[in-house]
Image 1 (spheres, rainbow, N blue to C red):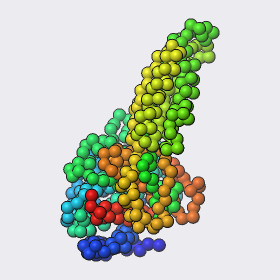
Image 2 (image 1 turned 120 degrees about the horizontal axis):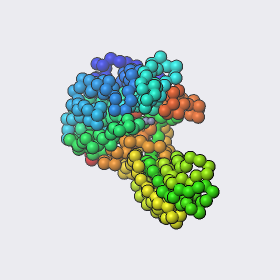
Image 3 (image 1 turned 135 degrees about the vertical axis):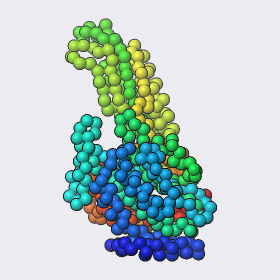
Image 4 (image 1 turned 180 degrees about the vertical axis):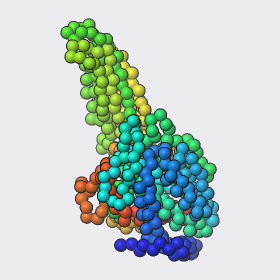
Length: 439
Ligand SMILES: [Zn+2]
Ligand SMILES: [Zn+2]
C-alpha cells in the first residue's frame, strides 16, 4: 500500500522540496504525505523495537535513551530526565513564530502479552509483589515511533519552519508506581511547557477499535476528568439484636449510596455532558450480629466539564454530610482522595481552526466526530495550561469488526501498523499549518 523506501537521502530530498514549496507558499501537504510514506517503514521498525522492549511508567530508561539519541542525530536540542524519564526536544525553525508542542507517551503496562506477532514482548517484571509480563498494551510504543518520525520530517524542514517545535516524550501516562509522582502532571511541574513557552499542544492516541486511516475527535470535553473519593461513616457499635443502642453506619451508608444517585439524575444537565458517580467499594462489619462502628466507601467521579466537576463535588459533600447527620452519624469525605485528572478538553477555537488540517491529512470522510469517553487521559494536564487538541487515529485492520478486536490493556491487544502513517502526516501538517496561520 505504501512506498517503503528507507533511503535517507530520498527523505532529505523530499524534505528539502517541502521546504522550497513552503517558501513558495504552494501546496506542501502532498510532499508531507510523500515524506510520511517514505518514513513509514522506519516508524514501524522503531515501534517493533520498543514493543519488544517495553518499560513500565517512570522506568522508560531504554526508550528515553533511544528517543534522545534519535533527536540528537537530527540536530535537535535535547533535555532528558524531565519528569523522571521524560525527554524534550526543541527544534528552532529558521523564522520566528509560535512554539508548537507535540506529545507522545512512552510507558507500557503490567500485562503478559499473548499476541502471535514475531516481535511480541517476552519481558517479565515484579509488579506490586507479583510476577507479571510487561506489554505495550495501549499502543504508546506506536506514539513514540510516530513522534520520532514526525521529528525527522520536521527537522528536514527546519530552514522553512516559522516557529519552534517542542517534542514532549512523556513517561507514566498510565499512572506512576505507588508512592511516586509522574506523568504529564510532573512534567508540567518541572517546566516542560516553559523555556520556550509553549503556545499550543497537539497529541494523539492510536485506537485498536478505530479503522486504520481514520481520525476521530471531539471539540470540548473528549476524555473525562477523574477524581476518586473516600467516604468514612462513623457511627456507634452495638449488638445486632439491639440496634436502638447503635448509630448504624451500614444503614447510613445505604441511604448515602441511594441519595448519591440523584446527582446524575437530578442535578447534572445531562443534555450538555454526561457524568458518572460510582461507588466501587464498601467495607464495614465482620459478623451478622454486630453493628459496626464505621463503614468506608471508595468511589470514582467522571465529568466532561470543570463546572460539572465542581457541582458534583459540592453535591457529594452536601449529601454525605447531611445524610450522615440525619442519622446521628459523622461523615468524613476525602474528595479527591488519591487521584485527580482534569478533563481532556479540546480547545474549541483551536479544534475548529485545525479541523481542515486533519481532513487534509486523512481525507474529508475519514475524520469523524465522536462522543466523549468517560475514560481519562493525562494529556489533560498539558491542555489545562495551554490550548490543546487531542485526537485518535485508527489501528484496526480494514474490514475487521471493532467488537472482535481486543480492548486496550489486554494480552491480545493488536495494532495494524499501516495506521501509523496517518498519525505522522496529521502531526506534521498540524505543525506546519499552525505556523503558517501565525499565532
Ligand atoms: Zn492505556
Ligand atoms: Zn494509552
